[in-house]
Amino acid sequence: MKVVLTEEQYRRILKEGYNEKIGSSLMKLHDFSKKVVGDAAHQLKFDFRFLVSYGAGIGAILQSVFEYLDGNFNGLTDTQIAGLAVMSVGVVFFENKDLKSALSKIHEMGLTDELDQAITYTDKLKSKFSYLLKLLGMSIHRVSNIVSYSFLIPILSIVIDIVTKHGVDSSQFQMLIESLLTSGLIAVEGVALRDVLLKAGEMIESKNLTQN
View 1 (cartoon, rainbow, N blue to C red):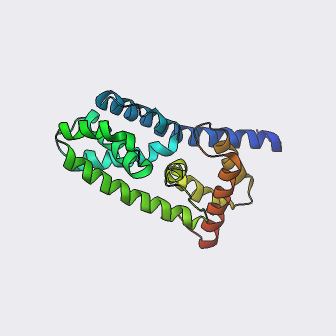
View 2: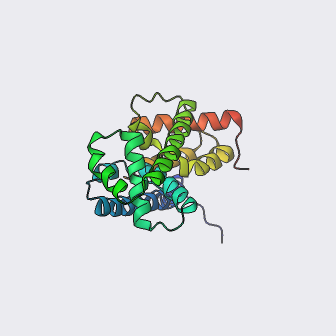
View 3: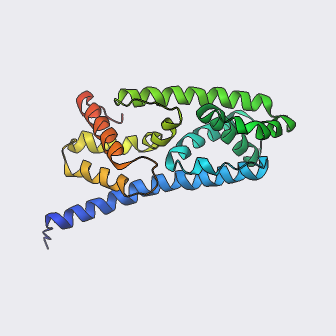
């Protein structure tokens, strides 16, 4: 039996599929960041809640730093890694002078060397993300803005797949943008998000990038 879908039905099914794929990816990052920030706050007795306001973007950075520490330092607990990851992000991206008390606790725990290496790694991440955003034609006026747009890293493979298969002008790409705009997990204004995704799509299309 052949089923014929209307344009509206097709768009709804397409959007639901993208919502599920993107929502799952971003929600995992958001939940991860809440857990890590919460563990760090409990351990260091410092309020890091401002980081969670950056949505999935902060999760992408924290996950990378967390995995680096977990893979390079034996004997650290997940809570200690959370504290080091959050502190390194705070120092590199926010230069928050109020972190002095939390820094003192890191030193008291004998984790100064681990923090120094975490900061070095995080600083390299900052440079990589900044370069990527410049490629997309974005002007970064504040270092903290990099955090807001870091959600692009984990979904870049989805963007590449859609653009290479269907193109920037396709309904599929428009559905991707709409799914992101309605996700509620991104700390970027709608117009700015649409612009950066269009630039990313155009760059991928012009260079004929693939996931291989």
